[in-house]
Amino acid sequence: MRRLIRTGLLGGSFNPAHKGHRGISLAAIRALGLDEMWWLVSPGNPLKPAEGMAPLAARLASARKMARHAPVRPTDIEARLGTRYTVDTLAALVRRYPQRRFIWVMGADNLAQFHRWRDWRRIARTVPIAVIARPGYDGPAHAAPAMGWLRRFQRPVSQARNWSEWSVPALVLLRFRPDPTSATQLRAADPSWHRRFADARAKPFAQE
Image 1 (cartoon, rainbow, N blue to C red):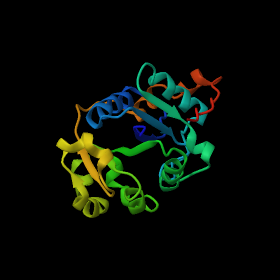
Image 2: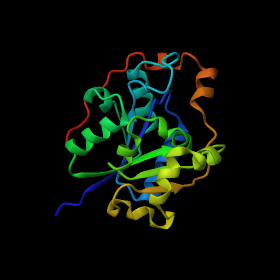
Image 3: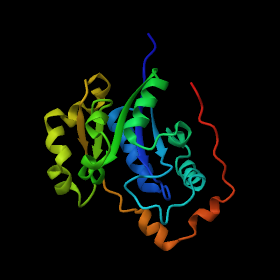
């Protein structure tokens, strides 16, 4: 039988993509034994204001530049699928790519508000979840309503590379050397950053 392709999914605005995204992705690839990581560049996060959000083409182009020479594939597949919420994106990806095994990767800041995501329990029942620690978010993440439910499904980090064999729900908490890079700070320092990608055009996502 053909081996399933172990694929991490990191969603975000990537407004812009930066070395912090790259760093945690490469660390997660090593810790989870991934074949590759997909960056799901969101057409629009329902929990984030639209003000200050660069065009999708520019954000995708910045992600592709940051992902060069790494097993990371930035994609606007959510826009192509027409999905707005993570729960719908995951359902579509699982159907569309049966040759892949997916794990959702997110920061502890997202775990702190995970209970606000649409059908978050269904997300947890669709794919395993890996949460990456972020400075300042350990307390809120561990005290979050979603963590109160997910805690019973937590797996030890020593078994992280076995995630593709886990039944869902399943959660693993990962801790890497923190990177202080912030997209908010980058935008403040260079509000017109997206103009460098003004001529960017979305490329079709390769089908397999």
